[in-house]
Length: 255
Image (cartoon, rainbow, N blue to C red; front, side):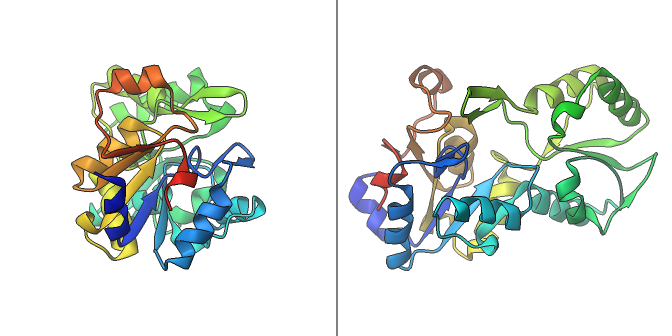
């Protein structure tokens, strides 16, 4: 995709962390870039695998950094996961999720013998005892529903391992395959397109992860733009084998 083709785009899907900010600091030029996109009237959706905050909390975090966003513009994995559970006829669950987002699953009944175990990030609560407990629940017949299967993300101190390794370990131990809702799944990108009200060919996805953001979007028929901020590393990108439709130094170049 040539840079001039971006002028024909009718809507923008973007990752959040690593694209617009890292930790508590905005990417240089991000606020101005967003303002220029707003001036063009371009609708934006922030498509995030974050599993520990609600859309309102995520919006508040970006607003504190001077970024003009609204909670309605966020497509989160908890919301997409609840949507998938309802569509699949699942009514009983075990929630291994942060307390802050349990309200997204208020319509489901928690059970000791659930139809599904829903897995998100629970921080330091992950230990051998919890893994063993979840293992027993899955061996008892529950499906594994992972909000995402990310490898790592970028924080101020560097790369931090994500819950994907724990989900993979549970799959290995139980012999079951998890249903993964977040990026790079088609379910997540479908939820984003439904939210923005546009077809796949009318939008682009911008992210800092070649596999999760770019390749996932491309499999959903969406053009993928990679930015060299956040978790981006030259060697990791080269090893991914992904061919983005466009590569930018940062979100500041997008407008």
